[in-house]
Amino acid sequence: DIQMTQSPSTLSASVGDRVTITCRASQSVNSWLAWYQQRPGKAPKLLIYQASTLESGVPSRFSGSASGTEFTLTISTLQPDDFATYYCQQYNSYSWTFGQGTKVEIK
Amino acid sequence: EVHLLESGGGLVQPGGSLRLSCAASGFTFSNFAMSWVRQAPGKGLEWVSVIYRSGSSTFYAASMKGRFTISRDDSKNTLYLQMNSLRVEDTAVYYCAKAHQGQLGTFDYWGQGTLVTVSS
Figure 1 (cartoon, each protein chain N blue to C red):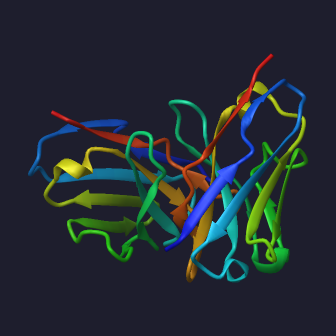
Figure 2 (cartoon, helix red, strand yellow):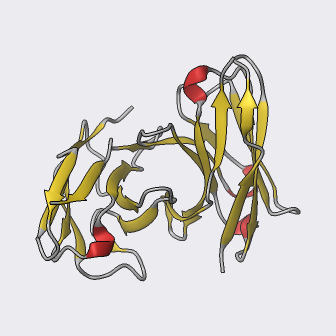
């Protein structure tokens, strides 16, 4: 299975900060990479697919990029609603796999 | 509005069986692949299985293959997960998730989840 490794595991930030989360794949997943946001006690929410395409209805402060097997989720200006856990997921090949998650907490 | 409602979770002993259901509404169920994704308490997300439209193909995560069976009944707009030979490590919230239009491997709608606890 393809392993997805996120960094950092936890990130402390303040409202208004620019935040970057990295996800590295153990082998090529092409651009078949998605990002999800999960708030405590809630189901995940799709933010980005195909590495950089914003899902409909997702604020434009979220963006994704890719360089080889390294993927990045950026939140340009952190808002109070953005404190949550973020997961990357590859869907290039079975088994589809998630990263271990990055928790964005209030500094 | 898309709505996914899981049911069937509960407490089961190791080695036991359980069948989860997911009732779908608000979209043409038969047109979309559906998946199960689970999350152990305090842990991350783990994809379990996918079933394509019409049940034409199914795939499983390695640790569930041979023990879990995904199925669907398009006449009832319902997704199922039959879980056999359950282990303590199968304890998790199980979510059903709808495949994104045009992006098979991503999930644009999720249910609220149903908790499965495997314990003696």
